[in-house]
Each structure stands twice: as C-alpha cells, then as structure tokens.
Image (cartoon, rainbow, N blue to C red; front, top):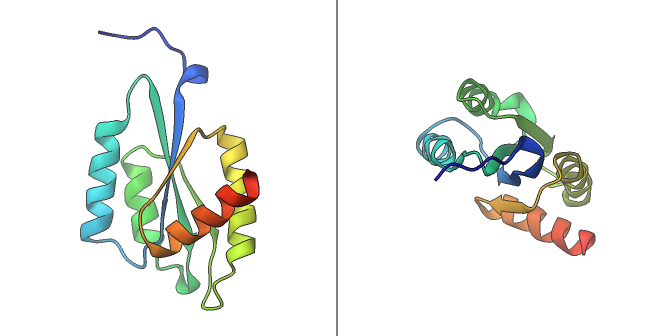
Length: 118
C-alpha cells in the first residue's frame, strides 16, 4: 500500500553514531538505513566530529548513499554537555521524533540529551 504522505508528515528518525573509521559497522548502518528510508520515515545521521576528522570517510559514504549527516563536537575530554547541546539543536531543526543510538558514547550523549529535553 502506498501512502500519500508529504515530507512534512514523515516520521523523522535521527541515528546517532560514534565512529573512528569507515568499516564493518558503518557499512551495516548505512545499508540498514537505506532499507528504513520510506515515504513514511525520514532518516538522517548524526556522528561525532573526532579529533583528526576520523569520521570523514563514514560521513562521505553516508552522504553518497543519500543521507543528510550532521556532526556534533567530540574530543579526548568527552564534552558531554557541549555534544548534548549540539544534538538538541539538530533534533529541533529536524523535528525528530526518534533518536536511535548505536554505541556507548552515542548512548551516553543520547541519554543526557533525552533527560535534558524532558
């Protein structure tokens, strides 16, 4: 069955991922998200901006696959509140209904952001 929903009524799902390179898990996430994209769901990605720009290959692959990718700040000091503030702004801009976190740092920043957003 095909829906007549417009993009404004799609459910916005943001996937939060910490990656230090582009490989197995990142490939799986991109392939999985391709399958989730539909006329009812708008998928986008947020990943951590690491020192040395190590997320670059993943971001390029995700964008080539057709996904919008935002980054949030990250460093060896683990700036949880700064990252949470950036994530909050992205979620508001994307009118996100769901945030799916994919690993430990993403889980932690996602939890902090959820608590802070109520």
